[in-house]
Length: 264
Ligand code: DAK
Image 1: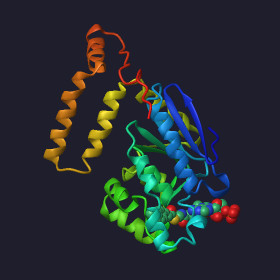
Image 2 (image 1 turned 135 degrees about the horizontal axis):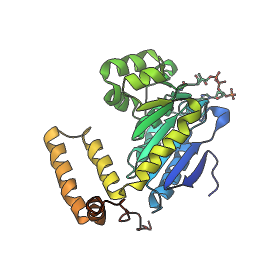
Image 3 (image 1 turned 120 degrees about the vertical axis):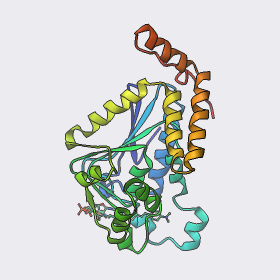
Image 4 (image 1 turned 180 degrees about the horizontal axis):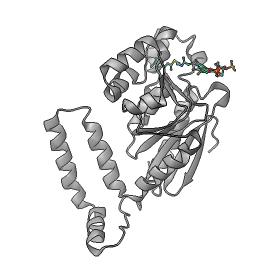
């Protein structure tokens, strides 16, 4: 595959996608969103991959949607194309996706990080939704996911004032899980991803779906959903292996979802 806007590497069960438009601080253009999805398609189909990581450069995770590409678009055009709807597919992945954010994560870049299952960041990270300064609003989930992540007060203030949040505040508010020195960010993220990749992929995917349900349904429905999924994993070989390994006092060898290759 010849990539123009990303790099793709695979190691120890982890797929690493690196945004690669350095001249534009990884601004998200159409091609970049297409390529992220193509890479995620490949990684999700690859039975050896158990976790995916999305990162940028040290200076910028992504400085937003590509302003130069958007400038002259008309309302009927973006409405007809359902502009940026392809981005939804990034958030709908089955396998876990971790964001490793260094430098700027602004506008669409911040929204892209919010589409991932969780975010680790470097101590130089800057998060912001500056769309209001451009006469628009966050359009790839920012007003919704940021609000769910950090609450109404902070989300409202950030989106209305375009203020940037630093790494420390991002950790305090729960936007990110942990902050690392910039030079350690990728290694630490890959380490966590490798740990996830060693687990039962079936269990990992069910946990991801079940947690995401919490944002969409009532507690009673969410609990019912969780219990049904819990019941269903007893039909999976990894449950037998995981519990048998515990009883036998040996490490589990999870294979059930990893052996299957799906052609689509
Ligand atoms: N788009 C295009 N190019 C960008 C860019 C962006 N978002 N951000 C930076 N660049 C380019 C700069 O134009 C510059 O290119 P040259 O001039 O060298 O050709 C190069 O990257 C380096 O940037 P700077 O020279 O500005 O670098 P500095 O270190 O001085 O400043 C900065 C870094 C991150 C503070 C600054 O670049 C900046 O403020 N960037 C823009 C940040 C921003 O406003 N981001 C939000 C974009 S709006 C929608 C869905 C989503 C959206 C809209 C609609 N629909 C569903 C319809 C989302 C919108 C956004 O994300």
